[in-house]
Every structure is written in structure tokens, then in C-alpha cells.
Image (cartoon, rainbow, N blue to C red):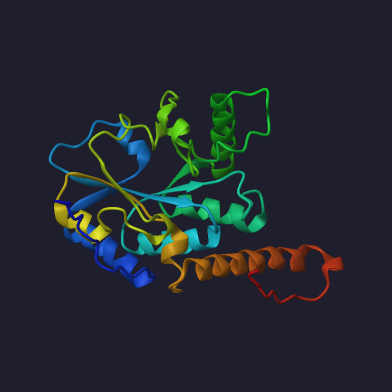
Length: 256
């Protein structure tokens, strides 16, 4: 007889539901910790949640999420990319957001794209150390954790280790934490409310800002929303610094 897997109920992604998740964590007496805190001896009898955000698309959406968490007394870790095709941590707009994320009490981690290897003479570990050092200088805080961006099975199985740094995909680094991810708005097992209701002592949630800070139901519409936001921030800097740019532009997106 075939064994039927339980189906996860229909789930809505929105800012208000994200706030409900934060409230549910607090009501269930979970303490949200940052990744560097896992390097310390855990407090006995305290339920903890690693709330993690990989910033793939937009620093502006990450800031919106970070402000909501701050309002609710929640700390989390934002993993940002140095080689993102969507945003630039060295730009005026995004560098200011990076600083504000830390001022709001959140931790900065590195979202590392192992598929981008611009320096053929460097090993993967050397590339990783380089980006960790650069991001530490940009953020003004020591970066003690990294997550791979769309890692291959080989990358995950390599179990890359650096002293004093958490690899979010290393099983022994986060031993005992139950992990869920909202990848492409699909829950492969439990959704956050089901995970919180489980009462497990250690939770690890990966929630991407683009899926929650966008009210559109379609993931492609969320991508369009983020692209428009990034254009607005880019144009604001151009209007303020480049006289030759001229008048403001409006952008229309067309999917082919």
C-alpha cells in the first residue's frame, strides 16, 4: 500500500502573516538568537530560534523586514551578498541599509555565491575568507557566519569549515536545530506555525524578505516589485549626483 504524505495547508505570504509568526514565537516562549550566539554555550531549558534571512534580491525589502522585527523585539541574522546582480553594498543606498540593519540589533552574515569564482588562483576557502573580511569592514562588525547561495550537492557535502565561523549548511555546526525554508514560497515539510506548535527546543527558519514584504500572490510579481524598488533607489542616487542624467525615468517591465 502506498503511504500518503501529509499535505501542508495553503499558506499566505504577507507582512501581516510575518508579524503573526513573530508573535507566535514570542507566545511560545522562543528566544530568537543570532548565529554568532550559537558559538556560545546554550542556556539550559531555553527554547531558541535561529531566524535567518538570505537577501537574494533587495536590501530595501530586507530593511522593511528588519524594522518589523525590531518593533517586535526580535533579533535575526541577515545574510547579504557581495556579488549580487540585484544590489550593491558599496552604493550609497545599500551601504546605508547595511549599517541600519546592524543598528537595529540584527547580525550580518555572508551570503556566498560559490558559483562565482573571479580569482582562479584562489581556493574556495580563500575566496570565502576574502568576502568575510570585506563584509566585516563594510558592516563595521565581525561577520561570523555564512550561507551558500543556491549550493550544489557537492558544495554542501564538502562541509567547509573555517575556525570561529558558522557554515549554515554544516550539519554539526547547527546540530539539533530543526530547519525549514520558504524557498520559492514552497514549504517542503512544515510551515512556521506548525514548526512553532511542535514545541521543539531548537528551530532554524530561513525566511526570504522578498516573499514576505511583497503582497503579490505570484513569485514573478514579487521579482518585478523588487526590480522596481532597486531601480527607484538607483535613480535617486543618479538624480542627486549625475547632472547629465537629466529628468527622472519611469520603468516598465515586460516579460518575454
